[in-house]
Image (tube, rainbow, N blue to C red):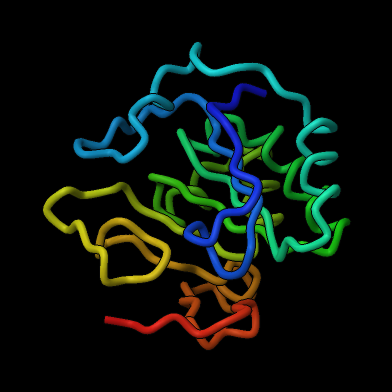
Length: 175
């Protein structure tokens, strides 16, 4: 898979200490994106699922793995494998996407469905510069939702993650 880079100890890409993988390639190209270097799908570098898994498995302090971008759904099959390996290691998985949860479900792509099923919390929606905020945890703009995927799929409606959620390792103040 193509990645832009990784962060071994992020505290801003979900709750707790996280291993964040920035995938390379993004069709959304949101104006004001904080990571425009990830847009070009031919940029970055090649990495294997095994190498990435070895990196996060080597850190016993991690709470989870975050798939960010770029756009993880542009490499959904590989990202689903990474997420599966994270779950096997006892870690939770957050995935950031410019797509809406409903659009991912409607796509009907088996790789997208696999990544969605391997995601604990989905941060969905494009970054909107006019909705930019520093006051909400784990997102860049107010339109983005933090979705508990398994419960949303089970109920057939979006269930939002809250900072008091059992998946959170600490409480984040809401603004």
